[in-house]
Length: 588
Ligand code: ZN
Image (cartoon, rainbow, N blue to C red; front, side, top):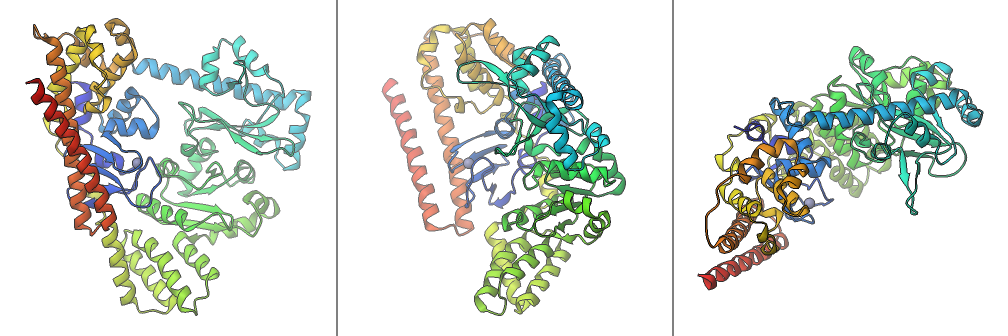
């Protein structure tokens, strides 16, 4: 079995996708809000039996576990394979290109480290950095913190960093890949960050993956980060994690703040288990990083940063963490760094009084509503019940149901009935066990003779390129076959050139296909038939998937409009299928 097959065997698409969106059972399929586009009614479906997914909403596309990860994480096939291999415990032989990608990443870490050192030394000694030093003094940042966090200053010029790093042997491409330089409209490359205070952002292993920056005047935006690169993803970064990890583990608690200075000042005063969520609400990826260190997360929120949607997400995080998320309520208009600087024991007291996130949600709703009126009581129930419905721990769920009942002075039994309605509408939640049990994968997912036959013809007969307009990437259900087809589309079918386009992990599969015997005679006709068959199979598959959706909509009592929409799509597919049959009959 090839490495790719081994990875497929050891991977369950349900478990992978469940890390990104909440799946609910819907007949033989699973449904969710699409993780790729924003929607209110779930139109994203996962098919465990076929190990595939499809979005019937705005995306109108689908694929297998590889294409899901590639799209979601914005990575190529090789990276997706390595991620899944790691998950499945499959070792990828080092000759399969791991070295190349790893070397490239290593180089980006190195260039970022070199930039970190450069910015840091500028801050410490350049006369041009006086304003930056003054700013840090004003914010009461001490020398030790400047060193610990390797704070820096980017000179206000177009090329100093670029020249410095070029002298060290880094290429323009590497500087671009690390997003340290940027290309302006006239095609000239220049330093991206100029005249700014620099905060190197490190991962838990201490690699600098990107930078946070702040202006030193009144211009806006005040803060900008590095854009997404192959090693920097803002939503998966936690500022300070490299310095905080061991304290988080030791204290068995992580405190999450929003800003760079909140972390720096907290650490300076000895609160070392503090990290920042990079200025946004905490994300699932960040929770997953922290989960490896502790189950106890405390969010320091300013009064208005927690909407209902954010709280709903938090309850989902609690389910992942299998423990309670807590909230520190900051005094009006103050950041953690203000509170700590003013009075460290006040901060300690706040942290000690951290409120469970759901109680906090109750409090803000109670504060905003007039719970003596019928309309506000009903509003409170509508806001809080969906949050309570998300809680997996039954004891906690019933605790909060009782709390809501007494808050709005309504009988618990009535609320329970409402809760059951919500649960029914959301579909039966999957238990963790259901998600984690790998399913046997049918042989047909591993090899696909029709697709491979089509590719062999294409690779062996360059003249067929002319006939290939109606052949689409989505006709290839196997990711590695689709990768080969996409690479073929990019190059003139010169096999040697094509080989270089492919990820190393696909080479073996590629060679097998390229070296298969091909039939003699009527190649063109055979090829056209092959495309028609692929197309037919693709549409039939879509039809089956759509039918399952329709079935689950009916079971769950979907609205007439949704049913009608699905029916309509079905008619479209059937029309296209009919076209294929007619084409075939005409040829025959
Ligand atoms: Zn979608």
